[in-house]
Image (cartoon, rainbow, N blue to C red; front, side, top):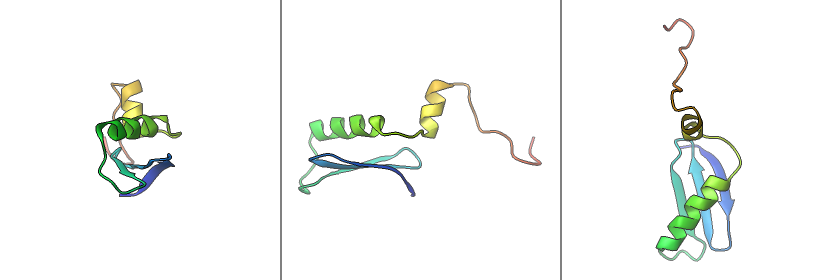
Length: 71
């Protein structure tokens, strides 16, 4: 999966993939805590850029456009 967004905090590395999947890990390589999960989501939501889910949340009736030759 291609990486779209990336951020580091003091304790986390957060990646958002092109399908909107969020990957996070602690910089000290320990297991993620509940607070780490919440921080990862908060960091991912604050990153610049736009994802398909963002568009669908803003425009709930949106859908893919037909390409050339498609109806």
